[in-house]
Length: 145
Image 1 (cartoon, rainbow, N blue to C red):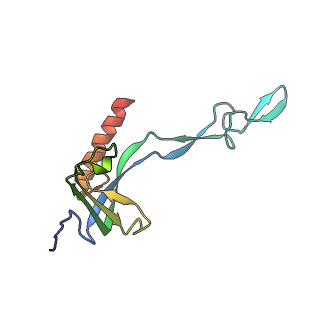
Image 2: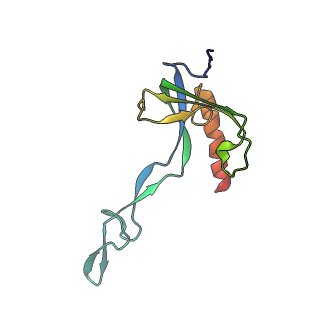
Image 3: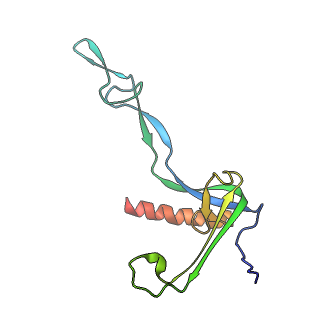
């Protein structure tokens, strides 16, 4: 008996991924005013504020952003439909289970050793849907701050 499994993805299809990033940037150290040294009683000392050459490493707040387009190179569909096993156990793998997870890997990030993207979680079929998801997640981040 053959089983046909359909996927939202096709090999070679363009998809849009989302990623949460914070970007690093440098800011002048307030302690040494960006010089890397402090002066006290006509003596010069290395800045005690753990800066590097007068610069402090900072990061922008985490923001979700659209990345892509990317090209699908591998499709993974995981379907679980188990009636469970009729015995008393605390292990979850013997209970009734029913799920479906569609994932893909993209040529751009590597097949087999790159990122695995989950459909409607980290990868979307259009840029507009991906952007709407980023906007929604960014609103959630802002409301928690």
